[in-house]
Amino acid sequence: MSSREISLSGSSLPGLWRSPTYRKDNIRTTHLWLKGKKIDDNTNGLWRVHDGLYDFSTFIDKHPGGSDWLNYTKGTDITEAFESHHVKSSVRSYLKQYYVQPATGARFSPYTFHEDGFYRTLMRRAEPIIATIHTGPTLRSKIWIDILMVTTMATAILATATSSYALGFLAGFLMNLTVVGAHNFLHLRDNMRMYYFDFSFMSCKDWRVSHALSHHMYPNTLLDIELCFNEQIFQWLPLKDKPWGLRYGSWFYSPIIYALLFFLSFLQRVASILCGNRKALRLDITIPFIPLLLMYALSGKTFWDAFCMWIWIVGVNSFIFGFLGFNGAHHHPDIFHDGDAPRADRDFGLGQIDAVRDHVEFAHNLFIVLVTFGEHSLHHLFPTVDHTNLHHLYPVFQETCKEFEVKYKPLRLSQLFKGQYQRLAKNEPNLIPPEKIIN
Image 1 (cartoon, one colour):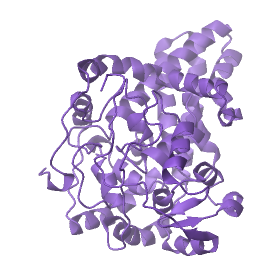
Image 2 (tube, one colour):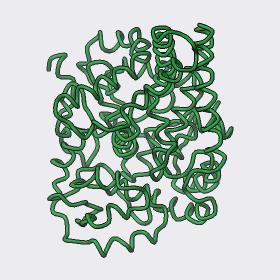
Image 3 (tube, rainbow, N blue to C red):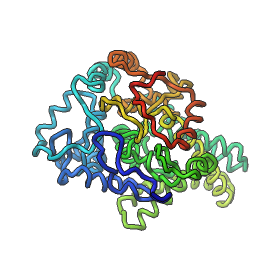
Image 4 (cartoon, rainbow, N blue to C red):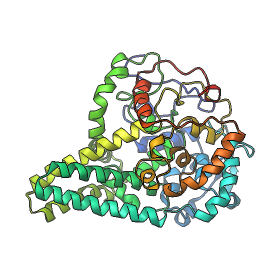
């Protein structure tokens, strides 16, 4: 296998018996991921939930979470998304009115949802708690994210007016807090604040696929776009023939990639449009340019001055986002990655826990949790619960972990930062499954 063909022929996880379609493409886009998933899931243009095929065509515009979720997933298996996005057990009863026929063949997925398993047990215990706190955004998180947005714009304008790149750095830092906080809202039903995420040059609409439907549903597996988005740049999988330059060179160029991440994302979107993906051409493509226009219109400076400051602010935002996103939760030698020995119990909730580590420093402070991808394990288990409400679920989470003898050990950010580089260099799989690792 050459260095240009860095890929596993199959997964170490039961249920993923081959590499997903289009995974070997150099750059995996949301468009390609959905196209490949429709091929792999083979649902005849319907929606699959467990072992049944359903037709939600007449329900798309009635869906309480917005039409995006069903429009994106038509023709795919949505079992993981259905289970994790609908905490109320009563929602299952609505499925029968849309039932068409039994599905043929096994699901192309590594996960199970047994009634007496970890995840279903946790969900039953969490349901009465969530009924009291609801799953939508809290007033607290709305106020915080709005204040951050206004403060970011004011600081960016002031930085331009004073030609202060120190203030520009502060604006980039504040914009990053705003973008990460907006990630909370893109998991929820359609709302205005999810578009704050688009100030990053990335798209909340696309992230609903790459992040919510891919990464969240299949973390650190071959179905996770964020793990496999470009394996010629970052390769976290434990491949024996991983080239030396990819293993250790990434240590040095990763900061540059972090700073360019948002710009590259925008260029990828433009390239996708030029290649015929008209669905990527939406009005929200103009959102990232709003700060630039405000900085130029209100600062009294030339357009060039505003443009240079804007590039600086976006670059700072991109670097912090990349640093936090890549180092904050999923990449450490002890965290499961496809290729490692998997847990014997393929329960969906256990799969989430095995692929995530929380960082100790950011736990329990509700504001910091909102703007740093905090309470990450609970967020993966309950993606539609507002970040500032996740702490209510710790008692039942810990109770269920104890009952199922699940080892759950948060790490320090410094450990995760170091571990990310160890994981990049790692070319031998963990042979001990997660449930047998002694912490």
